[in-house]
Length: 268
Image (cartoon, rainbow, N blue to C red; front, top):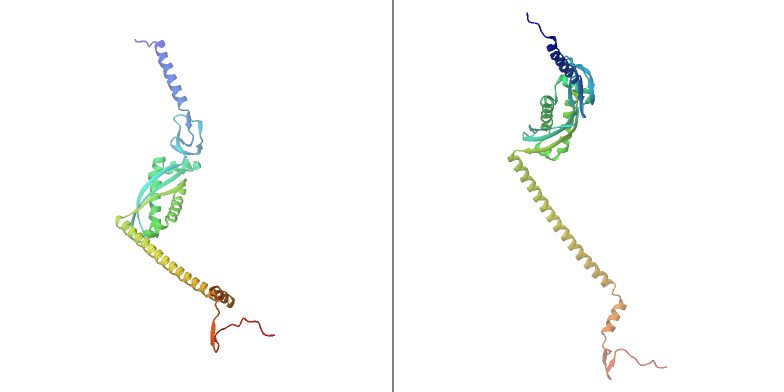
């Protein structure tokens, strides 16, 4: 009968024990990195407690830890929507969002990991928010009221995501584009408006120049009137004296020409 050598078996048992102990030691701790939270599961069932950053003990084969990031993430999506005047527009929207740290276990239980959150929650919420906001405005109103549209979409997305434990940090409308025909009509309208404004400016300028010319003429006429008014008798006499040639005017009498002005002294 074959006898097993106990000395040959012991090394294998010892090696197996080392492997088993190493396995349990390596799987008895979970590391949660910065910007993460740990979802705790016991036999696959999500627990209420959430692990913060750091090293945590767990029971191998019983407890499993799934880390989820709570940092701000960016999701960019392109969508097509309609306007009140039946125009079609393409919108590129960027959403910055993060998981509420205290809700990571619930959202993992309801939805899944980050990739599933984006595909099942974020993108549908953005699309539905766009379709709910753009039909309220005409295409021209969207172009002129872009900030108002952004604010409304922002609020729509927040309302949809907050029920899942997701926080909206920022919404950006990266691009809004319309059909080529509508874009050309808008450009033609803008050109016509610019030309109308230019013509209005030229007409207003001509009117102002005409008014200025009339005012200048009135000013000159008033200046001449005041000048004539200020020409008093003394000034006229002075002007006459300045022009006098030194000869007095004469009259014809019986004794010949006599001066009009008698300069002889009066008789006593």
